[in-house]
Image 1: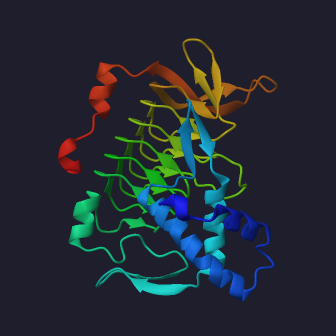
Image 2: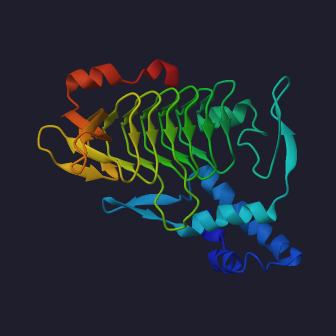
Length: 276
């Protein structure tokens, strides 16, 4: 459990990270490994919902960054015919056997890569994709082909992260929020969500939509402009608006064309058969 981790030691070591001796790094190693294991199990998270907001745990980022000091690059091979790796972060499934997958209730298609310290809830499906350390993926979510989930990103339950979609990661600056994709979100193919954007529950992000913290998300019906988040159940497509100072120029934006209804849900419904 995360309670056994000496976070006072983690905080102190991070402040002195450029001065740590070999002896101190060796003593720090078990604490770091306990933290990574807690992240892997989902007992520790880089950010968590608290009273309707998301609160960042900067200790988690410090712990992950310290792991690059306490670990050495090692080679690994996931199986016959698969490429070898040489990295400080081991792969999540390196030592797993059939009972481990059955207990976790996850399905991992050939070509999927998850680093240790990424949590996968029951019913998660990984198509050939990449999930970085510190990420949290909720139950029943599918990460489709060539999608990427960045470090510390928080993904809710029953989401579909479509092919080629990118979810940004964040380790630095320490106080920055990770990308948050809440429950029941559909993220369209080749879309990109970065810079700590929060996509609220039930939203549908269209194909090829790119959202960062400064990207305006405009409600077509009301003219309301959102920055850094997508409202609950909003259906967002890529759009543009005229620059007030240079009307001959158009600036990229996201456009809320409607809010999800039964017809929308029918189009984005998840297939339980591929999650069983």
